[in-house]
Amino acid sequence: MKSSSNLYKAGQEVHIKDTGETVTIMKSQYVKNMKRFSYIVKEHPSTFYFEEELEKI
Image 1 (cartoon, one colour):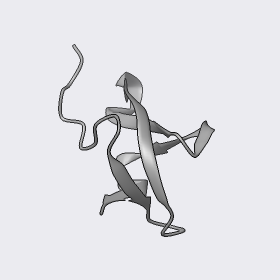
Image 2 (cartoon, rainbow, N blue to C red; image 1 turned 180 degrees about the vertical axis):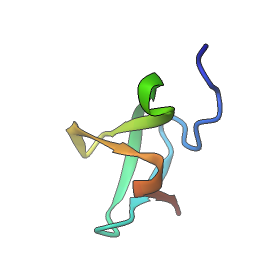
Image 3 (cartoon, rainbow, N blue to C red; image 1 turned 90 degrees about the vertical axis):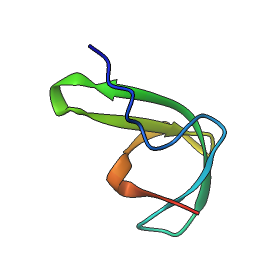
Image 4 (cartoon, rainbow, N blue to C red; image 1 turned 45 degrees about the horizontal axis):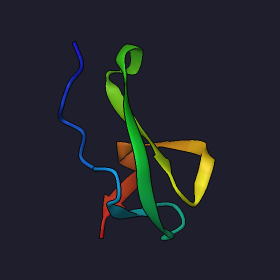
């Protein structure tokens, strides 16, 4: 069963904690075996981030 507790929505701007860069969420996906969401951002579409790597602006 897919959880609906993802913190960020498509189109939302967030910061990458490590760099402070502002990015835009493109897509979120629940990773069942890790029990958490991953996010793909517009600025780095070949990389994914987990919730704990991002923060709200």
